[in-house]
View 1 (cartoon, rainbow, N blue to C red):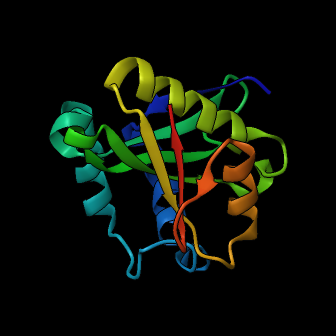
View 2: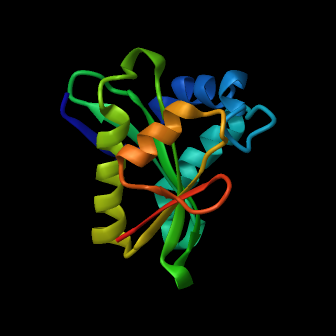
Length: 153
């Protein structure tokens, strides 16, 4: 499946809200409370006018020409002085095990290198998240610390 990354838009709110507030995903992230619809609408509005240099984060929708939303991938904790950022990804259940996560990371890497100048990506992955560990290792990330996986370009 040919995929691409695109910016968030208002019509994504329902799936974004459902994904962000899926408590089963919180076991694999730093999130510990739900987001309101108003908070996410505000985030989408700000994301449309702020760039990664201002916001220190950037979220993309993983999309295809056949399916509008396959998942989400984001950069966060961007440190311009170190040309480094963290990456997070969630592929919606029905699109998993199709290579979409791996392809999304590759597209995000191209954005980082060509558009932002990021030369180091990190992922914070809990040891019980075997699927994410396999995904990031397949994508060339190496475990550097307890839960930190890194890839330098």
